[in-house]
Image (cartoon, rainbow, N blue to C red; front, side, top):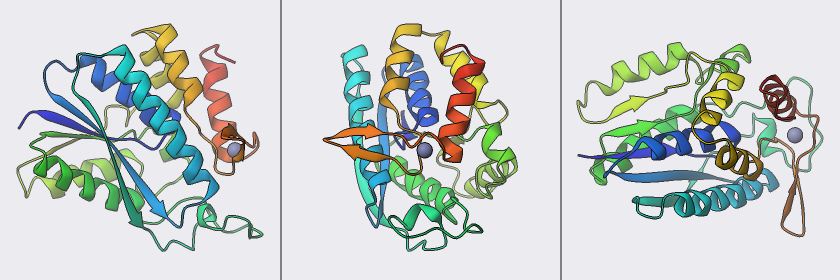
Length: 223
Ligand SMILES: [Zn+2]
C-alpha cells in the first residue's frame, strides 16, 4: 500500500492540493480522481477541461513521478442543487451544495485507493467551505469520516487544509513554486455558472465561488 488518491474537481483548491501532494511524493503513485457527475452541465464540462489541463501540467513539472488521471462518471440525481439546474431559472432558496456529494466521493475514492493499493485519500476541504455551511465540507465532517473509515483500517483520509482558509492554502502553495502555482491557478476553474466560448472557460464573476476565489487571490496579492 503506497500511493495517494487525490480528489480533484478542476477547482483551485483541489488543483493546489494535487500540486502540493505530488510535489512532496517520492516513489509512490499519485492518482488524480475526477468524479464526473451526471447530468453533464456546462460547469462539469469546464471543470473537466481544467482537470485535464492541470493533469498535463503536473506531468510536465514532474515527468519522473507516477501521476495518473482517473475519470469516472457518477449519477448524482441532485435536483435540489443549483448546480444541476443548468439553463433553468433558479429559485433563491436553492443552495449550490450537492447533498451528500463529499460523502459519496470519499467512499468512492477509498474504494479506488484500496483497489489500487494506495494508502492515502486526499480531499481539499478548507475553512471557507465551513463558513459557507456546507454539510460535508468542514472539519467536523472530516473528523467523523476518519472515525467511520477506521472500521476498515485500510485507507487514511487526509484533509490537510481543513483548518486553514482558502487564502492560506494558496499562500502555502505559492511558497513551493510561485510560477508553477500561478500557472495551476490560471488553469483551474472556480465558477458555478461558467460559459464556454470555443473551448475557453469564461467564469461568470458573480457567483459565490467566483467571489470567494477573487477575495482569496486578492488576499495573497495575486489579483
Ligand atoms: Zn462564477
